[in-house]
Image (cartoon, rainbow, N blue to C red; front, side):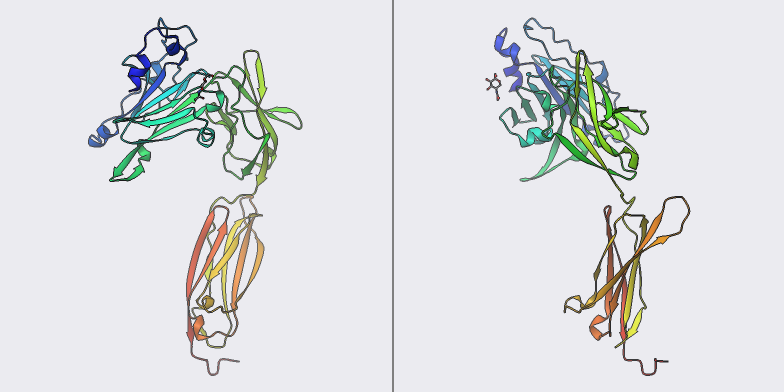
Amino acid sequence: MSLVNLSGSKGGLVLSVLLVCSLIFELEAQEQRTTPGRKPKPSKANVVKSTNKGPRSVTDKPTIRATPAAPAQTFLTQVVNRGKFKKVGESISVQTGDTLELRCRGKPVHWSVPSYLEEDDDGRLSIVQHERYGLLTLVNSTGADTGEYTCFPMYCEDSDCRKEYHKAVKVFVFFPDPQELFVPSADYYEVIQLRTNWPTVLPCQVTSPQAKVTLHREFPPAEVAVDGTEISFNVQKGFTIHRPRPYHAGALFCVASLGNLRQSSTKYMLIYVNYPMAPPAPVIQASSSVSLGENLRVSCSAVGEHNVGLEFTWEYPGQQIGRPLYTEESITPVAGGGGASRQQSQSVLIVDEVRAVDQGTYTCTAHNLQGATSVSTNVKVLPKAKTRKP
Ligand SMILES: *[C@@H]1O[C@H](CO)[C@@H](O)[C@H](O)[C@H]1NC(C)=O
């Protein structure tokens, strides 16, 4: 039992070095399910402040700061002493070097941790499932451990378990590092696609929620205005460019300052990509019947943004026997209001000298970066027309 271990040796130097920051996630989900009409409990998380001023305090204790919790069915508790728990909010700060201990009620539970910790298993992280809760322990913490820690209760039938996503509880943990204001990155620079009208995040993650962070363009050197609308900042996420435009492209970086320390983040190379707003909406057209020996044309077309790639693939009855069909593809500008220029892409599937095997369903699938949409039409092959030719 972790509680016993944590508080079992009184006055030991060992214990005061190993820290005292345990948190408990407790779920009230079951209760909520049985009483669906109940209003969510008001969060009391924001009243929490560290009061770790016990007699054993020979080292700096972790500072626990809480921001208001989301109105979820969850609360977090910090273990401060034997059997004493304190609720915390959606984020906490744990001094680097200290141990983070998170407890999550459930049997069993699954944990997700910052990806760096998952990939780089150096023995500092341990996850133990107890009878009624899961325990996550991270020792010798560093600023790089900063990130989101999530517990998913599992629903099990026999040995078959799945995560209960709606009951997930998470806490964002900062590990303020006196030397590193930014969570270190393995790469000197990071390439980020700016997609038309899609929010883009520059994840310059700071290790301390107290750091003041600004955004800068490398060339020409300038600070980028962060107005909260076009570009906003969130200390757990970084900068978000909400509706990217071509002029946002270029090399950017973040600068964090705290006390006398001022540091630059990794560089972000922002590349603008014309990106479709939505999956394509193709239209298929063919004559519903064709006579043996005639030529068949099935056309598939979709209108999309100018300069946005669109591809077509086909499925047709003669495919199985390797019927040699061919397609003609074309792109034409579409006149239209609204300022945004659009284009029509078309693929025409051509069947020369129709045979009986060509009867059936023709399916065209239009693909763009957002997805693929299929449309179908049926073609009937009729006996040879006798006097069709003019
Ligand atoms: C944590 O740090 C201590 C002191 O440097 C070291 O002895 C110990 O092996 C470390 N533990 C892990 C799991 O890395």
